[in-house]
Length: 129
Image (cartoon, rainbow, N blue to C red):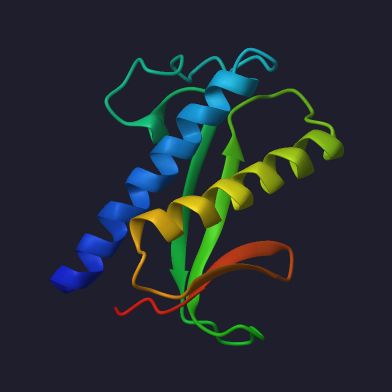
């Protein structure tokens, strides 16, 4: 069973990703057709379940990683259309930039970094989990 500190950390992290999701929906939401089974942005109570984006993170123990344990950032776009690599990279950079800002605001007493770890981005540092 996960402890209270982990649940609180992940709750705050979810709010950060929900905010980033909303910002990306405003900028990119009408540029790509949604999958037919995906509700439009704002139609459900959870931004993960609607709109073009599902942004979040999953914990990794970090075995085999040069950065060790942390949260791997996941960016999923719910479209059947091919998203050009340049656009995917642009979106990734916006997510990372915004994530760094919001982590600093949300956790001002912790030293957290968002780093590239292989093909993914990872939140590392003072997780206090």
